[in-house]
Every structure is written in structure tokens, then in C-alpha cells.
Length: 262
Image 1: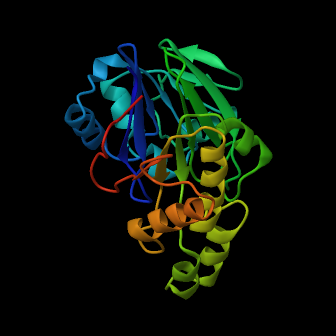
Image 2 (image 1 turned 90 degrees about the vertical axis):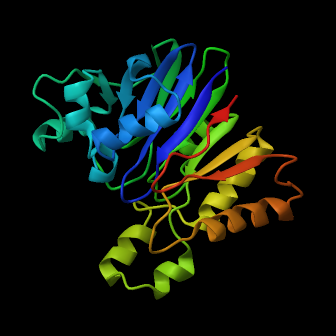
């Protein structure tokens, strides 16, 4: 049986883990090494099972703990060429780090990994579809200004999907952020709103998704209940009921979320 766990989520740091067949893949390391190792222990994931680290992009809330973690666990790091170059240039990894460009589907630790481009203001950001040993697929798409055809195609058909629900439009509009930052967040290269997430979640459930994880919620511009309500409401208008047609989880900011088994 495979499992997924969102370890941490939000602008303070992001990290998640996928396990299958005795192996595990870490996706992002945006909190401290200590926090990651503590979260893995809390969710009964042995660090020795880790076969690699998939990095979505180089922003600090996704790589903050990477350098120290690689000092403890010299794992290969997979990302786009642009992201890998940034990790080196910004001294975010040790000089001896095993950096591997991922540009096409491959196998890591017995799991299939398929990268896809995401629209965000970073150097070659990626999302990932991870296929477990039993064929179950987990789609991960965070930090995306809008849903592109490539993102939609990659995620549709995945049984479990981790999708950004960054901001509530009214909270962002009426909040205290400076105007330039509001424009950046709401742009096509910024972050995904609750309505944008909800619309995509409906497509996902209609195409076979049964487990949805809302990820990367803004602390200032969103609220877990608001995000979950937006998604459940959108799906409900189409006749899809939570608990019958899909399960919904909002990833926690400061503690590991519940394990999803599939």
C-alpha cells in the first residue's frame, strides 16, 4: 500500500512525502532539516527509505532546509535545469550535492515520476505526477498562477491530487499587502485562488480523483474553512458530495497532516 503525507504547507515552508513499496520520495524541503526529520518520524517514515528529493522550484519556502538536509542525507536532488542552476548560484545546496535534471518521465525508487511545467515566477518550476508500485497516481501542483492545459492534462486521471488553494480573492483585495504584491499574487505567474482551485477540483473529480489535498494556503489571505468551503461548494453544485464522491483535506501549516493511504 502506498501513502502520501503533507508534512508542512504554506509560505512558512512546504514539504511532502510519497511512500510506496518500502521506498519514499520527498517533495520540497522548505522547512528546517530538524522539522522534516521530526515530521517523518511522526508519520512513521524512515529517512533511510528516502530515494531522492523532488524540488518544484527554488523559492525559499520550498528549499529552506535543503542544504542542511543534504548534509545529513546525501540524496539525489531532482529538478528542472533552471531550478538546479539557481540552487547552485544561491548556495542552497552543498558543493558536492548530487543534482539531477528531470525533463522527462523516469523511475526513482520503484516509483514513476513525470514532471510537468507550472506557471509561476521562478526558474523552470515543475509539478510532478508520481506513480506508486501498484499503479496509483499522485499529482502535485503548487505555486501556479493559473491552470494551463499542460497542468490540467497531467493532473486529470490522478486518484490523489495536491493542488494549491493560495488565496481568497476578497481577503487579498481588502488585505494589507502592498499593491505590487497583490498584483503579483493574483497574476498568471503568481498563485491560484480558491475559485480557480475549486473549478479545477471539479474537473479532477469528474475525471476520477477521489482524494483532494488543498495546499499552500496563505496565512494572511486565506483560511482553511474558507478554502474547503469554496471547493466543497463548487463540487456540490455539480452534484458531487464530500465523503461519497471524494475526500477533502486541507494541508496543515505547522504540523504534519493526516496520512492518505491508497
